Image 1 (cartoon, one colour):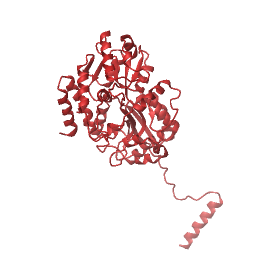
Image 2 (tube, rainbow, N blue to C red):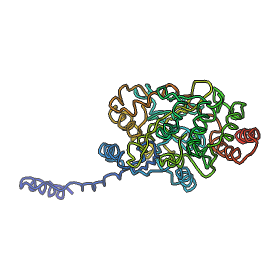
Image 3 (spheres, helix red, strand yellow):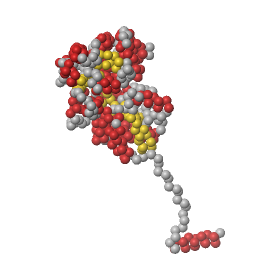
Image 4 (tube, helix red, strand yellow):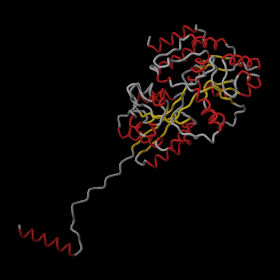
Length: 427
């Protein structure tokens, strides 16, 4: 035994003296680099967020900063997007991120338990500066945040300025304030018909797309409301709303169209087939006028006509939600994208400007060099609070356009709005 040990020691010393290192234990095999976490972002057409070219800079910048995450993007539209999401729910193939509004992210998918809690994203300095009303619209009643907001706006309506001018109808509105009375609206429609414009406007009710426009039209005309001030119940069956619906149905030149949704109304308006559009905002003007070389008339954005002289415009909020996949790595990667977009002022400004809306926190001067968006800032003071968080909102959206169809078909208005109330209350 001693002899064997001595021979071994001599061998080791000899190898060392000759400059040959003795073989040690084998090195462990090198580990393969970790595979990137793959996540998907689906975007509704929130301004230019529906344009792959417009968001390519943000996406590629995120990829460079996060090489361990692989992000792919799919763009949805409002005609088929909801059905696409529902198919993904049924098949278990939901994306990780989605860009839309709280009425979907919170009032629909959040209430169904499909969304991850984003509370940790609200602990930053930037999140602390988000307007209180916006913050409230992103949080469920139990305090869970389903949305991280990016931008906001007010929805309005628009008129074909050249057609109004030719028909002598501009006298019935206040161009400077962008306001008009209910009586002025009626007189303008009559002037347009007298000029030869048989269809001045369409009450589109083929689905819920663009329903913020018809809601605002009806509730403004005679001083009604869609919900109570606390957003706990729906008030569509009020005498004011009944009177407004009767006014619209009886007004020659305004037609209820059960085959049309908001996108279709905008298309017909931009073709000159309608004298006014009820589904409008600053972002739409950028897309359909500034970037539409075929448009051959001037557009004037307007508030909705009202008896009270105090128009109330539907507010819009858009932001990111994260679907709860149960995969913590994917959820963390999705949140990393939100932090990337919202955590830096320059990138956040870019994200807001892509949407052609306004930031959800004070950022003065963001549109100083943009005359069009600066003009639309005049509508901000007319913004109503965000009613899309009222309980049973998904049912209310569906009941609304079905109610409009019944009114347009000649059903008694009182009966139609009572049917709406029963549907949203589960009665």
